Length: 372
Figure 1: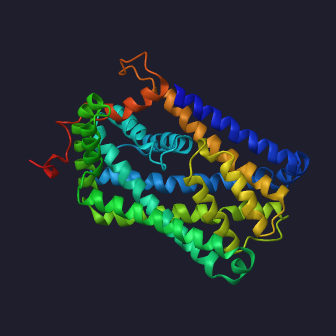
Figure 2: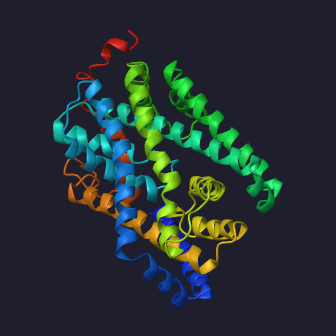
């Protein structure tokens, strides 16, 4: 309960910072710029955002079908929205929503939740690889393009290179360890158990975690051809995310000017890195402050930048809120299967990741991949 309270306080603090900064810029100026975008610009941006989301959702749906987990596109979309909402609000490098996706699909279709979770992790890692490619692409433009070299201090470029390298090494090592079934999480839990921290809890979690890692490894080694297709879809999705600020600024600049490639690279790269530091729900306050500084480097006025952020963040939070609403509507968090009625909210979230193991020991089609 204390962690949830701290997180709520951080969200209120981040939102308060946004309000104060926007008040200093001037609400009237921001509102005037919002009117320039109008319904047309917002609807176009919203449609493009849903197309981007649908690409990654389609990729996951193809992975599920390749493992003979046949579900409807509609249910996949619901699970995808639920995962998006959790990933935006919960600090976890954007993988906190995968257990909820697995639990929803597994319960609706009565399929092994471990297997659904493994496919979700596979699709998510491919999506993260696509993001890494565009981060490197954006960083290369920032460092090498003459326009960026004139506007952006060299230290920022070098910092971005370092951050990209760290993210890339962590991501590639994680994928390599999963493919080779190193079971790093299981080994970590065993080490913690030897130290004597949470021994009873970890003792119960070890066999479940080991089973999960074995199934995930099997999914990663299952079919490289479907992996290429999902990668292409993820590249399209991230590419849309990279270029879609053009829509808003086109209307903000009275349909007379387009963002240049270096400006898009700076907006995307800095924005995604700021979002990876998930200290508040959805990076509230952190992303806005960092982006306002970024826009100063490319000579975009604060009131125009603020209007852009209002539209983008409002749409993000509305979609994420829809995902959280669907989670509550389908009774995923407070499910009737959860007997621990007195648990705190955070503890109930934790039980989701445990429950996806309970029914799957005998039903998984990946048993042939497991160690004897």
